[in-house]
Image 1 (cartoon, rainbow, N blue to C red):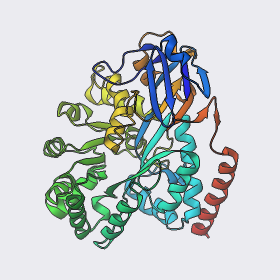
Image 2: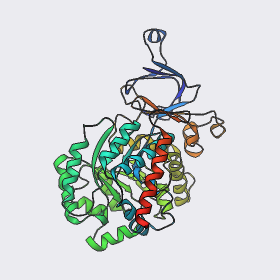
Image 3: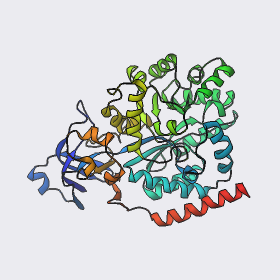
Image 4: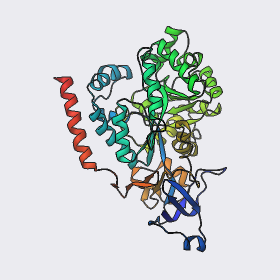
Length: 430
């Protein structure tokens, strides 16, 4: 057991999720075993393998990155300052065609280190060469929900179903959800088959949705309806799921999400960098639709930093609405933690409660940007940064502490990432 003592605690549970209490958190294996103030008898009868004095800093649930493409770290700052379609088809796809499984392993390992420095212990990752990706997660101790990334013709649905059965209930820290890349990269036959898979497994489905105005307009021209309406007509959202981005949504689209219990995963950093627009968080919230937060990939962001995403989510929507009261910081913090966990199907990783997974972080409140202590939740969103992350724990294991990694050789990862990235670029250019 590990004992975190002398802590401020934000559980994000119950009717007052942002309430700060003082006490202790204990973890036993991969679970939280105690939250609160222990009695002398409890302390007397409990043996700890490690005791960590938190020094009145904050323990809270870890962040959940609800949309990303981890192994795209090799494209960071390689294909910048281009519109989405040109960026994707002219720059990204040609280099991705050169990827090997070993490439994916090293590139994903790098992303996992970056997630940990930002207090992220789980991601919703959409990519390929999954065996190598899973190995990277297992070797770094990182939790991941794999999102199906199929595109192309109807036959690709067999691959999606195979992966769904292969990666669920097989690997520690790994689960899999039905998903596809986007309407504009999938033939209708594939979309129809995905709808049938959703019905067969009574499963939610996830995809890029309405990221750009062009995507929506092209879909209307092709099918006579928006991407959301098309997906709903094919049964894709019958059991919920989520749309990544959802920047250009009609009121009918939002009604479909509400009625189907689907989440919207907001990606303000990527949407800003690619000039896709600002999602209407006010309308989404007013509809009662669940909201999660994601960084998107390191080629379109380019950082994997949840603090930056939280800040952008709030301030961009204030600007969009011309209302400084819009997009409250508490809602943003909830989306980055509990909202992400719910959207990803990680219901036992969302809050600090006994029996839940021990996915937690310690934030340093003694740095200048967190002083004075007035409202900790809001300060995390508006003033917090990665520099405040003192410790990141996933499934009861400390993976990052005081600037160092405990489960990975960072220098070895950096060296291999550079080598593999240079090889891919040389193959494309030469």
